[in-house]
Amino acid sequence: MAATTLPNTLAEFKKAIEEALRDQFPDFGETPGPVMIGVLYFSTVWSLFEFRATNTNANQDSIVAFARKCAPSHDQIREFQPAFDYFRARYIEGHRTNHKFASLVSGNSQLAKPIEDALLERESSGTAKLTGLLLIAYCLRNNLFHGTKWAWGLGDQYENLAYATLVLTETLSAFAVELG
Image (cartoon, rainbow, N blue to C red; front, side, top):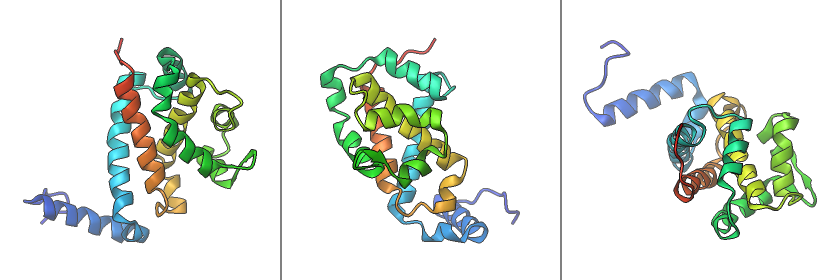
């Protein structure tokens, strides 16, 4: 059978893909199941977010513009507090960003600034917090889709991906998104 022949069952398809990934990237076999579920849901929800919130053109400017348009109220931003607290604990030590933050933003100081300002609460408005959270999701997307996450491994990424996915789903739920 040719390598690109579609297997007869979902189980056979899954097995073929997992074997191919393990052959090409042995670390794939070390990735915990919950992380792979996180990757699956994050990828799906990110795609929907990018379509609905940025009209298929996600970048720093379109995400900032979207968050400004949302202008979340105090009550709306409260729904995001658990995710905000998680990312703050992950990326801030004392009153400074840490090495995990540097990896997240991959040296992009323009992208780092609004996230850092939100996490350090230099900017504490609902819009600043939503912007910071959505830009964190954007960084995770870039690191995952452009492959840099594989350089460090995905082993500790479940909570990152899960919280980012929850931020995206809550954003889509809380703010009416109309294209065009």
